[in-house]
Image (cartoon, rainbow over all chains, first blue to last red; front, side):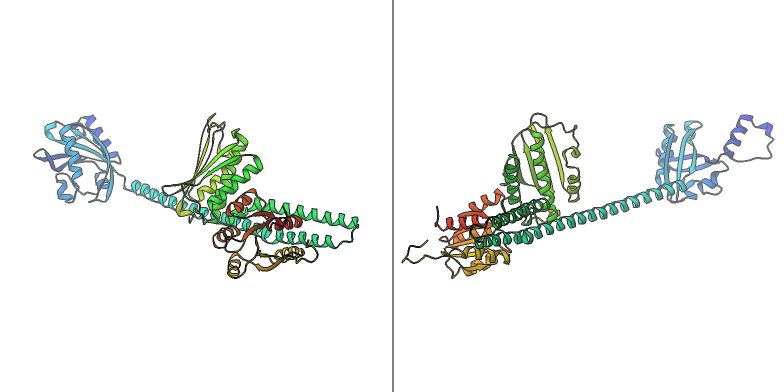
Length: 375
Length: 131
């Protein structure tokens, strides 16, 4: 505010002196401007008074008596518009904005002063450029961090998928060794035993019994090898035909648990193949798990597995008309599906469970085409 | 068994089996029967088809798991190209699924490798030598 040290202090009302002292003491910039209009549109404004902090905050030197467009020719129209509205309406405004000319951000409170016809506005403002820059830097750092997290997550998912595939390949390899080598050796041994049995002297009961015992051990070994092969990687998984795989599951479920499974592949055709080995095994395990759930929970002895094409991929649905369940009662972990669901997500797939108590359960697995190298 | 003075009719078999030990063992098992011979063996379906361009076996015995074309596809192929030749599946797969699939493909019989006596019985049934 203008100082006049020649004016005796007792000639100014004490409240006004206090106000002036207060305005000069604050850190914020303060000014009173007079808006200049042409046809009710503010086209410029003149600085009438400023406080001590004005120059520091605004970056303008000795503005009193000058028009703003003299001092800042490139001032954005926004400033004239908003102060003009305050001057005309009397409605105070609080805002933050950036002034290109001074390259500063301001926190501004503008209110009309004096008589409306005087078109004067008081502006209380603070340079918040440093804060804004810090906020922007923080925001940028957050964005960068989020991008890094996304990238890292993607790397971890890729690694998990690779490990999953490595695990699947290893299981398939072991299953092949068991089926293609060990079991075949055992079959050959069984055939050789028959030949040996025929060469035994007639009546040699002891030798015959010993041979029978050896044959029984070979049979047991074959049985164990077959069970392990199916647990590791059923031979039907080696070829990739989805219809064949589901057909095998259907027969297996009927044989083991008396569950009649109807397989409907008319939506995709008999030759539909999933070439990605890990995805094929995942799908097999998931459908098998869902069919186990029918056996364990549904209280019915029938289920339907349907294969269908959907936009962007295909769907495998397992449905029954059994007791159903309240989905809010059982999380997917309760249905033995949590780990499989996670692996499904690695392939961009989804699992939707819908059930109504007393009306049955439907589980729909959707897998996108591009992640599966579908044939 | 042939009646004295009569010639024994020999039935010829083509064996399609990729594992060399099993192939040899099965061949020896079958040829242990006087009326059966195995003049042709193949380690793959493709080799079998090639040999069948000139060979005329009374029976083709095939495994299901073969390198390249599998046994089911071979049977389907033979149903079209050599409809007069019967196929017997001899496999390590015990699942009902495979038996169903083999018979649906056109196999005349299905037997697993577990029991040599059962294998011989299945071969003779396929050749109509026994009921």
